[in-house]
Length: 303
Image 1 (spheres, rainbow, N blue to C red):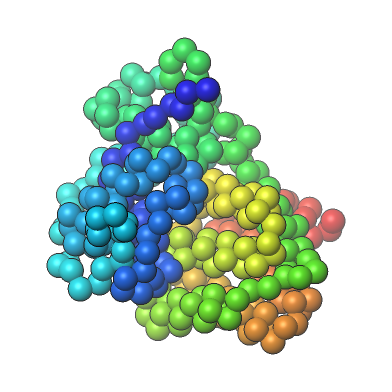
Image 2: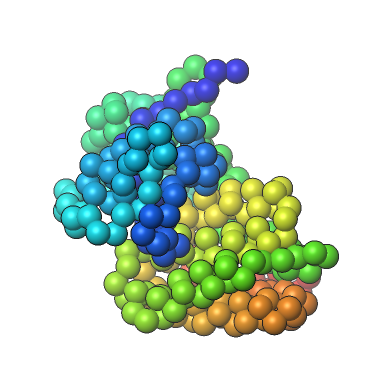
């Protein structure tokens, strides 16, 4: 089956740059195209193009026949003009969650609604395809996966995480390498040290998502990890409007640190209980902000 390709545009480069920041990757860290392709659900070619763009701006270093590496001593990234595709993404995220758009859309509808060029439209929809929100129709246009953006979709993602993530910590043989624990602890220290107030919302979201994915990787089950990664890609669109609540990121970082302490002590059962309590608090925060209906929270707590 032939792969349908889309324009990737600046978003993949921005996401990779945010990933470098979110994971506090050190100078010289190897950015493997295969790993990044899996992380962002794209082929290797657009990853290579994005890395070349970052190399041109001095954010990564390219070594022929070796690959791409993190660079911190390069020039500051140049200021960029407002991105119409990202602005359209935010508007579309709101419209989709309000069920004011779809479930089938054409290229012309997107271009007319958001004043985009053909290339920008393909870039926008390519992003939604990578996040699992849209799929290319056999003829023309796209289908929107309405189940993933229904009013109760965010409640369903939280319900799945409450089942999956504590269970991963309870699996026999769960092991999170000490180096990973130390790296994750440095990230949380950096957040609590003031980065929460300074970092863009996308970076904060990625740091949180990558914390949970790193812990899931300790279970050694690739199917569980891929399921969580897909849920996180969908949640990114569903929670965009909640990303500006900075205070909850402080609470979550402190809870992340408590979970790491328990894992490092070898008390995985207690870590699983802490994870469950953490996710319930996340759900409560989203409910307080109006992103999860109160009845969904009450129903889940009675199960």
